[in-house]
Image 1 (spheres, one colour):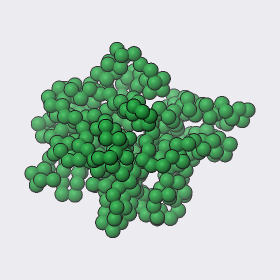
Image 2 (spheres, helix red, strand yellow; image 1 turned 30 degrees about the vertical axis):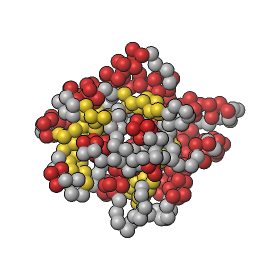
Image 3 (tube, rainbow, N blue to C red; image 1 turned 45 degrees about the horizontal axis):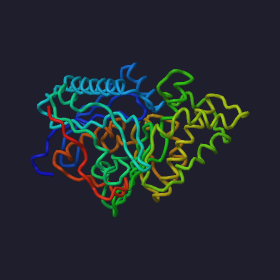
Image 4 (spheres, rainbow, N blue to C red; image 1 turned 90 degrees about the horizontal axis):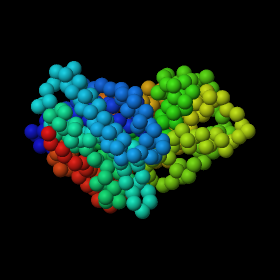
Length: 373
């Protein structure tokens, strides 16, 4: 990166599979990488969130609704950017670019015609903010045979890798993914499976809440082995990397099918919640143990705020040290948003992103399309 890049500002926008809001961060390039300057999370308008959930769950949408939701989500992103700029007293002219992940509505990396679809019209974001917007980060990787996900391991390597030290960066959003940062090899990363998604869906079904704050619902229950075993037997967990997944695979309907297959077994709602937490913890830690010797595991994403999940991760990884990314100077809730600010910078400088080992692409590609206001 040229010396002139130091001090430049970028904005990252991230809305993940949890659909809990839009994370917005202003980040600045410094000699150590990127540092977080300001950040916020903006709730999605309830009607928009419901539409997105329905589209993701039903896997069906008419063209007019798709176009309107694409428009609505972009306006929500632009509004969030403008509000953060106002609150942080930073002018739009000071921002080099916005990196917008968009909202994934369908991710299908397997099969003869793989694709990944994100909404959030970058033209509108650029027009409403007056800032160049970089978006559509996944599809060029897929054009070269990759999964298009996860994208953040390259950022984790750039920002968090340490010479002579092995580390794991664990992001627990709706889906959980790991980045294995070996001191002497290239980064490895993939989706381990569900993170918060099933837990969020289950508590929303029973208590109309977006998530189980402080794991209070889960802590009322006990792990149900009769339910846990079939969940763990899903073929995804035996699949070799590179691999990625999403709401298309692991969703409330999938969970309800598992429960229906276990009739006449009865599980209390809080026992299911506790079992889902254990399911996430086991599938995450089994992959970390498979890929690493004892080292530090740094957690980011909403799962970092779940005390019971963090306890279970540490208990299942007794030889590892489980921390969150705050100790690495980035708020665990905004690591992914900072990653998309970084990806925007890489696109402006036309730097290929080293993801071959992560996504399975046969070529490292320059990712993202540029939309100028």
